[in-house]
Image (cartoon, rainbow, N blue to C red; front, side, top):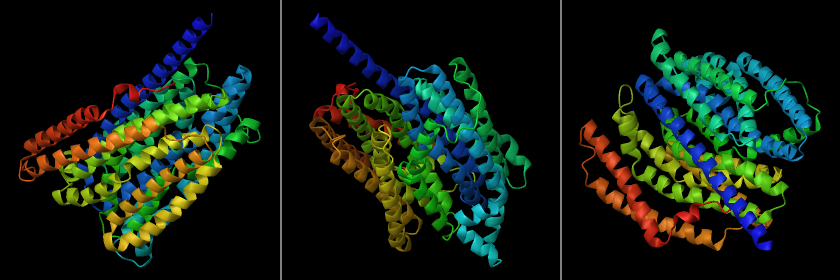
Length: 533
């Protein structure tokens, strides 16, 4: 009988492991599709506007709602809401669960609706706050002041995106909690399609093409929310919203969410601070930072955010089920997974920064000079990629236990550190210093999160994972050595466009092959990338 029981437990553990891995693969696949379309979108935008003044303005007014999207869709709201929802599900009280969802929907919806209205009315204030350099030029009647005027108008179009993305994030979090990960992961594809369509068909109708892109952001928000509604209905979770500020579970979400805004979104807040400082620098600085950040977001979203998305509900169930061993093993798996892809991705972006930017973006208004300037900040951002990824998978170790105090303390420390790094590095390195400061603060944030998890005996790197990380670093170093030699002797700069595409593709595929082969020889095996529970 005992043998049969043990067999059942082992089978259950294998099913959980397979389910977690499958969920990660599904989210990664959907995210990959979204990121590909995101690159297509950026290519269209780059060809349309390059790194001119209008491009700087659009990237600023798009960054603000995009920042809010990360807070709600991939950050603070999900980190606060999912553990409470999981806790409510565990009580097996469907009526209470439905009431909770209705109260959260109504409360969040009303708050973000009026916030969006305030944002539209106060768009000049927001433009002055995040584009201070342009505002000062506006007050002094200097040419750069036109950027402030354009930003104030365009924000009236893009800011309402907050309302739609907040409810989209809520819907996605609910679906993730019932293991319907693919719907929420696919949803961002629709935003990219909307922006691309407006860039192609609507922008040419405006005297200033950037307005077409701004409307693409607005329309994309509407489509994203509408897409998720049928899936909620199918799950029986589309409920009537109602105000519930004082509802016990809503209060708990609110209490967890407010500090989590800092704890999980430090890197995004730092990017906004970078944008503010960049508004004082030469025209093109914001655009160079934007293009390089977009390429950094590809591996970060494809792997870091995808793994974090599936790990949070799992860790919440581990915590509620009082299973610290599974909790430890699942974080350990997440750390190995992001290191395995993060190290070579960061190294590859650093070595191939200019070739990647030239092949993907260099056409139309995006010149060779733009590619060179953006490659410097991409290299600086790449230095912090693994740190950004680790933050995504270590932060759920706190939020799944409904601990938001520790991450917020570290978030504040890292924001202060980022500003100090900015002040130190911006004078000698200009916009490159801003990117490097963001990377340093991201690495600091990851280090502080791990320190606290280890101190509280919640998670400690296993010996297996330490060896895994060392082996991955050795494989990455070998990959970089071969890649540098190959690219230096490839004649990439003097090649024509088609030859450059072939050379870059060969370099990326060859580097990946070298990394995988060398990983095998140093002792990394596929089973080490499989979740334990």
